[in-house]
Image 1 (cartoon, helix red, strand yellow):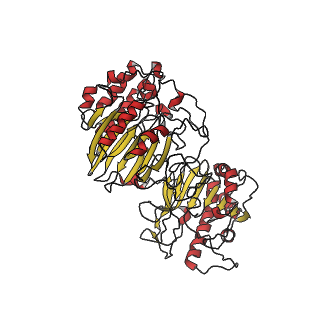
Image 2 (cartoon, rainbow, N blue to C red):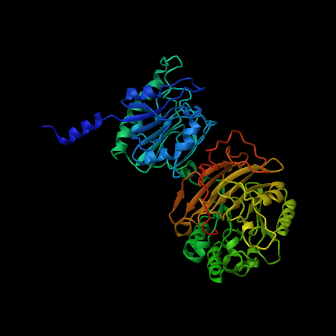
Image 3 (cartoon, rainbow, N blue to C red):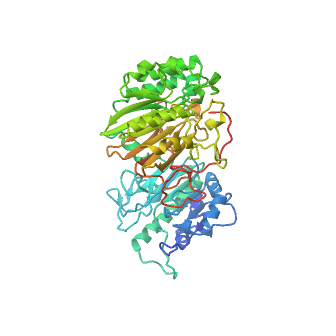
Length: 589
């Protein structure tokens, strides 16, 4: 008598698995092959229906290499990108093979929990980082690499990822992943930077590349088992690969800037969390070479004495250990923090005299007031200046900042102010009714004059050697990034970071910028001392080059940016960040 478990296993192995395939003869290879590859592996193959949602299908959706070149691709993704990850959520598998980064550098179907970005880096070396993964079972591995000689086996690799387990990479540090898998709901999303599914030429003949074809057959066979395991809820849990910078830790010779955005909820409800942040910064000031801590405003929520007392106690932990600058926000002004006046308790609870004794304190716009200040420091042979401006800066404060920047024209500039850029990676612009302007400084009762982000760009930022602007304030997902050339042709990197919408008013997250010794590479990381963890999503943890801009960002007047590839309607608007519908404001941030 047969064992029931054996009968069940045999039935499982014989069960057909549907595969819905998008196979396109592209201009790069002039080849196809996805359908035939999966048929030979044992899938029950159909073409992916173009005229209906994939949500409700079962099994596998397989998007072949360079399918994004298909004229129908863009319309399909506009209609059904969200339904693709709903398909995954039901316990199914979505595979996308390699795509040209100039056509699609970020998969449009990824949920917000997963991030990926392709680049132009190709590789003939393939390092195996997850040798126990089902997808590489049976592959010939020598010295942790695939034992196969194939030019450009890794084609259009990834240069950013968040939430994925990297299975294959062009390097041992997962800097340029080639094959990776992420989990969403009950299913899986697999992204590849390989064109091994291309095996049939324009005449219908098999391409004579035995090594690549052998690898493809093994991958497809493994994929069949993996789809069955996912369906049966037997697939191994994802072991997320940390971004390379997080993996290797702090590098000798680097230095750090720390950003504290919107601590208002801590000041009113969880003062211990505020102190947890500053205590961690104090403890790591020397190990991480923290040069400055920059508070981006909304230090308090209601501009009350109790909140200011708590905030000053928390910030006091930095005194004598690491200098800091403050840029008060709308909640730091007016009765109950409504910003209807420019009255604040800031200067009662933060001593001007004590902060003026900090190394690098350069001066203030108004005597004995910390609302608008500048700070100087030098590190790695580079001279820097920080301009910290009040909420909705007055024209007089901007004129003062212009004067200060002219006096220190030999320094790289950093501007911090509470409200500058919105979460769509566009500067606030009250004169532009075509884009969201929720919580623009002009929408408050703050006494005039008031300036928003676009006005600051025109009146101040673009005229000088600013390298960075930092702001908080904005809700939604609280992130944004763009880089535009100033009047001298140099890039200004403009960054939004805000975590107040998360549990406990931010869960202790702060933004760290680590500058490599090369003076050009900067690693952005969101870290919580409360959880001792990093936020791995691509709009929180990513790397930039000071002499480069992101390839895809929204046009904005006066920006002067140079774009090296077209921006599609479905393209994200910041590093690793998918476009989201704008949310109606629930409350003033």
